[in-house]
Structures are given as structure tokens and as C-alpha cells.
Length: 556
Image (cartoon, rainbow, N blue to C red; front, side):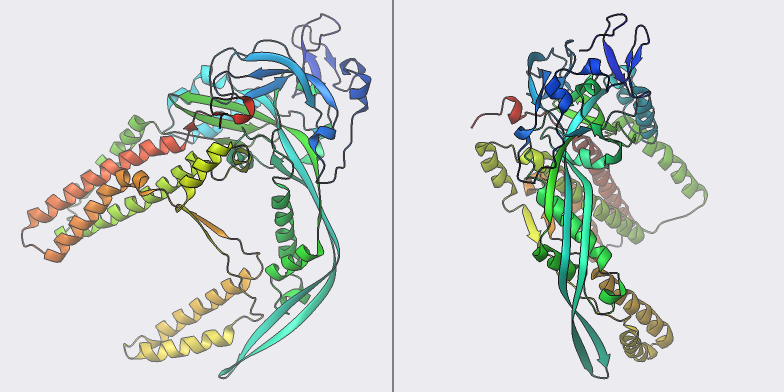
């Protein structure tokens, strides 16, 4: 806590002016003023151009106040010593436990630029587009809980230079033969990517941090603890090696994509995968620095679930979990469906019984597909499959349970590398079109069929050629356990089965068709209601327990 030199009140960093400002007497001072230097050692600072293997404990320390939540173990740090009355991670309103300690200095910090008023404005703008959002999200008491938090990030620089050798091939068709030419392409490269950031806290979900990215490193400045005054910060518990390979692979993939479009590569059939492989063999140097980036953070606790809204404190970009108010949703459905039904009746538009059954089947199939997809997404969310930071901090017991959950439910489909053809495929498309035209001629539509096949063949060939400009990635397929799907998929399945059976039997009594259609619509409507409920599950998460903070689950 810093005291105002004029009145002695707490002086805090003001994002609007980028100055330290006293809210009582209005005094403004630069954050870099010598009065905010805690010690000569802290004033000196560290400009670490660390090799990727160096650890964070090589940085100097500064004194902070730790606030730990007794419910979830979530922990924040600050320069202030006033009591924190709620936890940003689980929404608990208990007084947080306080202690004083030392924290490693970041290499740099991006100060808050977006004020709380700006944050609230962007939040309301986003919420205004969510017409079915609960009114509780718009309450002043809820919005007032926005808290400015500096989130820890590992920031990577990736460099590669030297000569690379790539191989390509071009295939051309001449008559009944396909001729393949092989090429070796050599070139000098100088790759330098800076500022690739990944959040360094296991308590800040990767999905949220990615949603409000990017941060502009150009606005970063040397770290001074004065920037924390009036704000909080999360502590780093993720090692810098966790995302290092991700940063390197992203750079190699992007560099390869840019390199392969040059004429010398494209005309010789070299793919981005070939170039990326050459760059990988050449080797790239990855260095890591530690930074603090500004995030406005809001948690909403609802029973045993919690949802988050986060706003980039530099750009104002918003990401949030938005549940659906079920009453608002079905009122909206009613407002739309009643006038539509009335219009159909007044227009004397009659739907035949067989057409009605087919329509029921189509709707049931769509709902079934949505239910299946939603169950898979909910399963992935519940186990935090995509959160590398959180998963890296699981205890031995949790890892064992996690493996049991994903066993048989998560598969990896290896990427298929497609080679660049090196030509437009015009001749091949003409060949396919000619064959199709001859066949179509027997039905009197030869020219139309030939033209359609020609266009489709050109498009397919263009897609295959474009595929060579991207580095293929393995596809991860996540399927929820059957026990998690059955309650939301059973009714659409029954509706499809019964409707299909009626079409097959083809009874003469129209009431049977209408009765089955009504039954199918009722079952589908019930499923939609369940999907809305599950969406609300998907828009939140279980109350967290952070092992790094001594939460309840920090036991083997």
C-alpha cells in the first residue's frame, strides 16, 4: 500500500491517466517515481533474456500480501493490505485469509488501460446481444464484483535461421499416364517471432485466456509494484516448459505457410508440411520471459456451479459464460410459434400426414445431433480436457481418475499429409466431366451433369492443392460416455424409430400419422428443454479446488 504524499490516503494506479492517483485529494504521480521504490534491489530490476530452460526463481523478489480462499484454495496477491471480502474464482463471500510474503518479479508488465467503467460498458454491450440471459447478470451488485487482476503469462520468442532443404513433387497426367517430377528446394531463412503468450496460472482456464487474446507486448513496461496498487494479481504455478513446444510448433507452422506460397516452392510442389519438417530439423531457439497482463475478472456463483466473465484490460475484448433463462427462452419460442401457426392456418396451408411424419423425423434427427454434440462438449468441459495448465497440476490420484475417464472416450486421428499437385487439375476435370456427360446423356441431361461434375472436380482439386499450404494437425475426437448421453438422446431416437416404423407400415388411417407426429414433437420439445438446461451446465463449471493453493482435493 502506498500513501499519498499530500494527504496520506491510499494512492492507486489509474488506467485512464496511466498515473498514480489519490482518490481523496486528486494528487497524480508517475508510477516510476522514486517514492514507489521498495528497495534499491527492486529499483535495479532484471531484464531477463532467459534461455527457455531457465526457471522463474532466477528473478528477484518483491513483497506482497497473499489472499487465500478457504473454500477453493484460490489465491491472489496485491500491494494493498485491506481485507478481501470475496473470491474471484469460486464466488465465495467469505473473508479471505491474509498473509505477507515474497513473490518473484515479472520481467515486464502491461498496465491496465481499460477502466472499470469501460469494462462494464463492454460487458453490458456483449450481454445486450444475449436476449435470453438471466436478469441477475445485469444486476448492479453482480457487475460491481468485477475485479482488476494482473494475470501471469509466459511470453515466448522463437528464432530460427540458416539454410533449409525441402522436397516437393509435381504430378501431371498425359493420356493414360501420370508423370511425377521430384524436386529438391534449398533456401535461407531468418525467422523471428516475438510475444507469443500463454497464461501461467492453473486457475485461469486456458479457454478464457485464449478468448480474450491477444495482448500487445508493445505496451509492456518494466515491472514496478506500483502498478499493482488498487489491483490484484494471480500467482504463477505453471512451468515455462509447458507451452514452449506449442509456441515453437505454431511458429514453424505459420512460417512454413508463409514460405510455401513463394513461386519457387509452389511451382515445385513443396507443401507446408515439407517446409515445417525442414525447419524442425534445422532447429529453433525458444526463449521465455514472464509478464503480467491486465484482466477484469467477474465470477457468478449459482448453487454448485460458477460462471465467469473476463475482459481484456488492454483492448476491452470480452469473453463470458452466458446461461439461458428458461422462462425467457420458452416465452420467446411461444411469441414466434403462435403467429407462425396462425399464419399457416389462415393461409390454408395443409401438410399431408406422410410429409408431417417426415418433418418430425428431420426435426428429431437435428435435435439428436445437437444433443450428442452438446454431451461431448459438456464432457470435455467437466474434465477440463483442453486446459493444459490445470491438468499439469493434477495430483497422482486425480491423474489416475482422469485417465479412467478419457480411456475409450478420447481418440486421436492422425493427420493425413496431402501433397500439392502443382497444377490446376483442368485436364482431369475435363476428363471426369466428359464421362459424366456421356452417362447423363441417357437421361437427357448430359450437358448439365457434365458441367456440374467439371465444376466440382475443379473445386476438389483446388481444395487439395490448398491443403498443401497448411501443416496438417492430428484431430482429437472426444465422445462422452453413453451414460451421459442416454437421458438426452433417448427421446429423439424413439421419435425417429416410431416415425420410421409408421412410414414403413404405411397405415391408411390419417389419425395414426398425426398422433405419432404429435408424440414425436412432444418428445423432441422435452429434449430441447433438457438441452437448454445442459447449456446452463456448459456455461458454467463445478466449483474449483486448486491443488496449488491447498484446496480440499490437494490430497493423494
